[in-house]
Image (cartoon, rainbow, N blue to C red):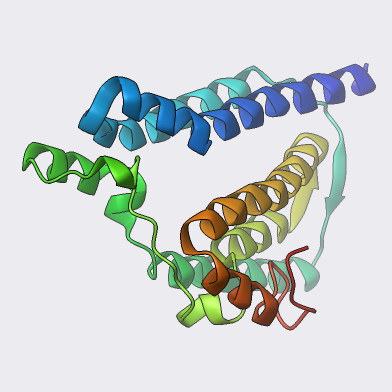
Length: 208
């Protein structure tokens, strides 16, 4: 029944990814602005909380096939763990260059309470970042998240399938995210795409 378990895991992740992407779309946000006005400021906080709850639910109800993919032994387990720690610091480095309060939705609520929220921001202020970690890849948070999740001394089948799904979702999500950034920043972002690779440092840059 392992195949059936894998189908369920992928299907549940697909449901999460579909809902997560749909709720993040510009079309949904623009429709909400028409209905909610500046109360769209509360949407980012709702989006993050609902996404966490939905992912936690799917994660908990997913089947867990009792299959181990690998279990590294010394010294490879130590090396892999050390690389995972380094990737964690890389994740902190890249996240530190973003506005965490804006990402979480806290800044939006504060601006709304102060009567300073602009509906044209939709649910967050979009900032074009191209310094720090963003000099090397266009999506450093995705890159270091992938490395941190993938560099494990041991791996079971459930975690492996979830990891593959997350990697695919990050890549697809980066494509849609960049479409929104092009819509906002235009040729400036297109030039950035030509200079900086998407996810793999020093790879050939471009939109794909």
